[in-house]
Each structure stands twice: as C-alpha cells, then as structure tokens.
Length: 212
Image (cartoon, rainbow, N blue to C red; front, side, top):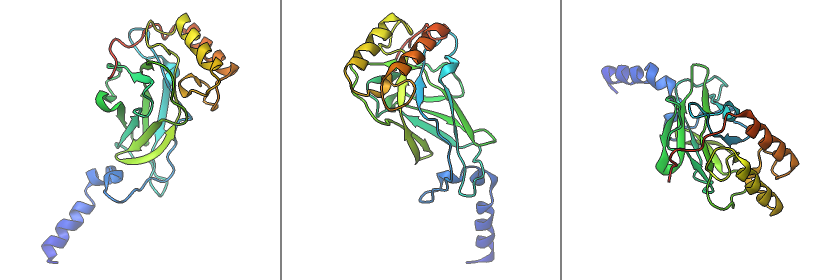
C-alpha cells in the first residue's frame, strides 16, 4: 500500500462521524450492555401531547461499556398486529415508519434514546410473548412486551376499554396487550394499572389516524 493510500485509510478510520456510529459497521456488532425497558405501554394523549405514563428509554453502549451517542434506535411493533401506532406521534424527535410499524429516535450524548409511543388496540386479541423488537441500526438489542390502555383504539381510555380488558382477562390467555404490569400474566394488578391510566385524564384522545 502506498503512503498516500495508507494515510487516507487512517484518516477515514479516525473520522469523528464514523466513531459516533460504530453500530452501523457491517458485520461488527459492538453493542455491550444495552438497557431496555421491561415493557412498552402504548398510550393516548390529552389532544396536545402523549401521556407521560408511556415514557421509556433505551441506553446503547459499546463493548467497553461506553455510551454510543447519536445512533438510531428503532422500536419495531410489527410483531403485534392487534395493536396500532398512531399516524401522528406528536413528537418531532421521533421518526415514524407507518408501513413497517416502526418508530426511531437518536440517542443523546449519553447514549440514551427516549420514546413515548401513541397507539391503541386493533381488532381481536391474539398476541402473546415479547412482540416488540428493539434495534440499533440493524442489530437486535432485545425483545419486550407491549401493551395498550386504549384497547379498542377509539374514544381515549374509557369504560369500553375496561369491558375489553375484562373479556380478555376472562379468556384465560395472557394476551400481552392487556398485561399492563408486564408480569407475563393478565390479572388484578393490571386492572389497577388501567384505573390509574383512566383517572389520570392524560389519555382522553385516541389516534386521529392509525398506521395500516
């Protein structure tokens, strides 16, 4: 290799923009110990902003446990077809990919990506397990449960959602969208979480439009 080519290669290696996004390097997953939420709760809004009860964060770190700033974190909800994301997330810091049921955010200087996702139930329940997948620029960080207080997807969190929850509880199947305490089962404590969401008054609105 000529000296000029070697110098050019070294310059590329130490370009700051490349150092900021090492998890984009093909074939080399540098993720060390990411911190993921225990579950994701889709929420409604007060008509202006999303309910703060749905806030969660993802922390991305490299193999040396250093935070990775300014990299894209993607939350993929395509594995939960009985839930729908809102077509407007009311948050300019989030990028919505409606077609693929994905929402992304950039990590801050400390490697933290913050989300509050607007959405609700859609159709009959059938999803169980850990349907939400979280990625850092193509690398799977992990999978988590995802639920929604607005189970019927209309009219905000209301009495009809309670009726839907009671029917799903009576079915005896741990439908993940009704598991608000993220315990892996649908029970009395989930009902307590639902009443808290209902009483908060921060989820009076459902999606204006939903993702397909």
